Image 1 (cartoon, rainbow, N blue to C red):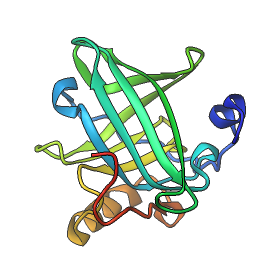
Image 2: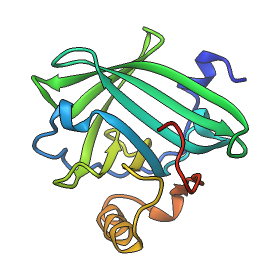
Image 3: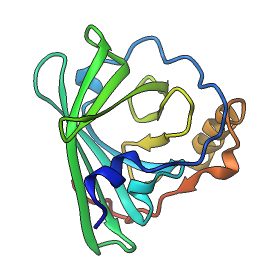
Image 4: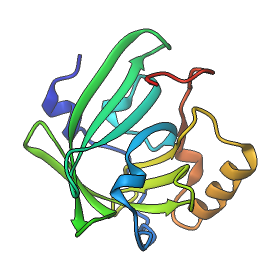
Length: 173
């Protein structure tokens, strides 16, 4: 297994595009829960991941515990998991947030897309080097995914996205 340092500080492919502005408001309470990774940019800590998810659980009004999980190479293979804390950069608004893992590794992200029903979201860092398309179910309808890809094409080369293999029934429910 990768060391913690290499896991979180590994070099990544740079896209050199500016991210869109974050959405105006993200309710921490509504955003909490399980999200399935539909697609992502390359990052070393998910290099061999399948069935990747992220789960947010409220700690208090402004802070959430975050749990990242995936299987290495194949569904039901070796479970890889790590946890951290998410804090909004704005009072009671997760549109811009800070994720901290292992008490020392911290990075700021923005929610750059969120549908009104909190079923689909895109999270990215400022450079769009780290980006995730997330959905409340393991699969997303093609029409919705196509809409997201059109949106992202204005900011990045979407051919660089890695589409995550998910279990047909979902995991971690």
